[in-house]
Amino acid sequence: MRPVLLSLAALFAAATPALAQVSPDALEEASWESGDLPEGQSALTARVQILLARAGISPGPVDGFSGPMSETALAAFEEREGLPVDGRMDEAVWSALSIHADEPLTTTYTITDADHADLADAIPDDWEGKAAMPHLNHVRVTERLAERFGMAEGFLEALNPGASFAPGEEIAVIDRGPAPEAEVTRIEVRKDLSRLAAFDAMGQMVANYPVTIGSETTPSPSGVHSVEVVVFDPDYTYNPETFGNEGDVLILPPGPNGPVGSVWIGLSEPGYGLHGTPEPEGLFNAASSGCVRLANFDAEELAGMVQVGATVVFLEADDALGEAALRVEDLGPAAADDAGSAEAADNGEAGAEAGEATDS
Image 1: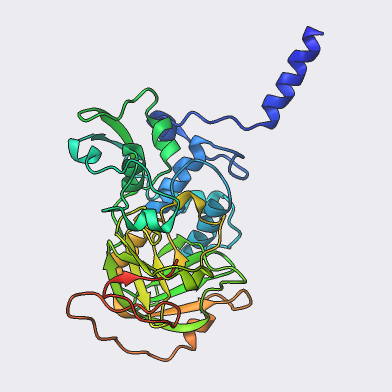
Image 2: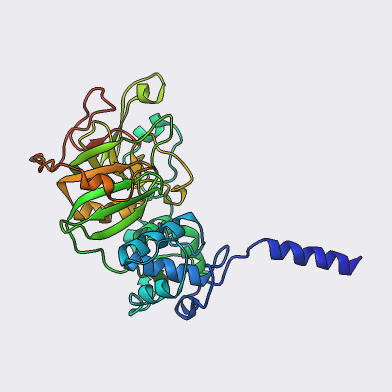
């Protein structure tokens, strides 16, 4: 019976993608030869994800796994580069991506005491517990570092096997490159693709991000809106009526593990915005309450480029890419609040304090 057992084990192993070797050397040596990206996790997919990020096309948290976020990122890159759009690797895509491989894909970082400071013991599941906390901070230093460098927490740990992540320890991290230097004047939320495309005044796509949008029961807005406020480290107003619950309105403290993450980009549609999320690896796998969720690091990058008054177009599944934007009338710049924040209404209900977000 032993040979049979070994055969069954071999078949099981072949059917279950193993975690790949994702050392810095493996990332540098990975090369595309032909065909689609490997199933499961691979150093090649991680390399492609990092190069996409350097090109301004975010794959979400770099994790080395092929899947919808990477495929839609490849499609966005093809669109931006004027290549046939199919979301698959080919010689032209590999050649265009390789332009961004002029610097090593990883670098080293020495962990500091500050990286361990103010970590939360845990984030409560209930709204009252969250509201009672002083700050909705990271729980683990690996969570904090992974978000800072734009990768999945498990990928950070795989890059550094055996690391304790203690202060003074040197670790390997990916290098997604600098943020695009651009002024975003128009945003397209492409609902059917779960992607957000950002354009400058010349109509050039300068960035593109994976997002989570609303569901059929709590849909995201439609049509044309504008950016009214950009707030970093926002509070969050929980109105139980919005969620069909009873109880008091609560003000949740800011923090990356808050319902809207580290950024709130409020829209002219009351109660709706573009914002961060405490669960970046859940993008594409969940629906929001109507707002548009991005990974915190992507939301922060977008917030650094977008201007108050920028046009935001929500494209439906049957809209041609960019078609709605061509029909948009100039909304004109909205007046910024003196304090750099604005009131955000809660889905048409009572307004919130300045700088607070009210929907997720």
